[in-house]
Length: 295
Image (cartoon, rainbow, N blue to C red; front, top):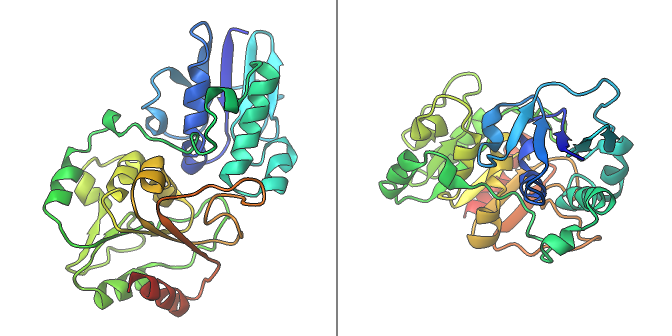
């Protein structure tokens, strides 16, 4: 085996959540060339320099192909729903789902296991190497902004895990209710929401392009992180926030285990942050839920 190509047909968050598994597999051998077939910006995994994005794979491979060895190239899926949703049906849209998928990859093709790489079950949570990104403007802004900060991930959900209820009125209502809090909004949806205590993350980061990893870093300065398990909320779900800092996450989606990203019936994970999860989609109810937690 000379080459390993990871495959994923889906979105930025799907690439982010398995990044630590990818990084560790890339470290298993100096003699293997590693690549990644996905349809997102190269920048998503630019903190893993050993990996090269691939633009094409053989036609016999699709999103349901868990793994296949063709000649001297091994293709490995990184998607929750691979193998006709075999793992997804058992563990749900959770870290556990990915853990068992990658553990099987390693056992079958590399004669090792995730436990052999690191025995801690939480080790493979997504860990962004923020030193690879320009975060200076974020540091300056945070130093000048001592207020309580609420990170609001309001981008559209692309993978169907949550209802795309409108968030602009929710954000404005919260900003009006808490004038001393700073509300950091990730996306311009429609028109910009105007309030003295609302700031858009792009105006802080100042990159003007794909800034999902930088949003993940910006979230580490925020006390509350609110979203729908997609986009910038997913990038805020990183090891720094979950295991080293004391945050409050508030998520809205349809699955029972998705909000905590852990199937406790399989194995439990203890976070340093508090995580609240709701299936509510009504605007007034969502505002009331969030206000109870912010207070």
